[in-house]
Image (cartoon, rainbow, N blue to C red; front, top):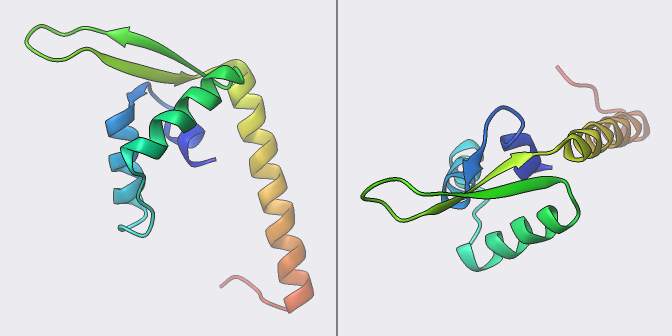
Length: 98
C-alpha cells in the first residue's frame, strides 16, 4: 500500500519513493535499493503501476512510475480492507481512537 499511495498524486522515481517512505515514517521504514526495485518491477508486472524512462540533460536517465487505473482500484480495495481490519481489531480489543 505504501508505494501505490505515494504514486497516487504524481509520478516518482525509485530513489524518491524510498526517500519518501523513510521520511514519512520518521525513519521507521527503510527500503534498501536491492529490495525496492524488485518490488517496483512486481507491481509493474501486475499492472498496478507503469514505468517510463525519462532522460534529462546532464543527469542519468530515471524510471518514473505512476499508478494505473488497476492500481487505483487495488489501492482502494486495500484501504477498505485495512480499515475493516482495524475497526474489527478495535471492537475485539475495546481500543477506541482518540
